[in-house]
Length: 75
Image (cartoon, rainbow, N blue to C red; front, side, top):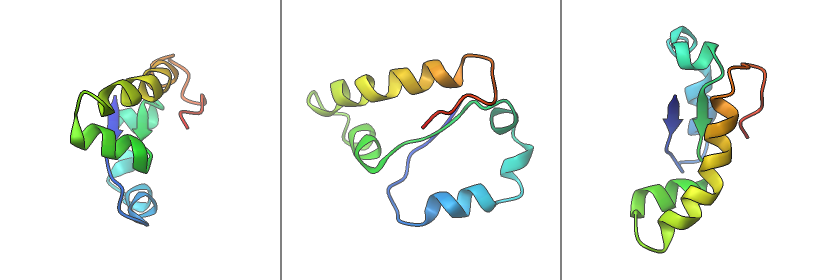
């Protein structure tokens, strides 16, 4: 599982364009998650208020990424 935590505009497209990323097993197997700006903030703050939100949104993404089907959308 690979979880990208970023809120910088345009960085996701730069990450996806990096040729080294394509060599990662997590990418080939569909086990990659890009957090939204809100999720990235919640992960960064890790407060009693932000963690419940993060868990509510991240757990379904983790389940989708871990289902063994690389074509499953993890958005």
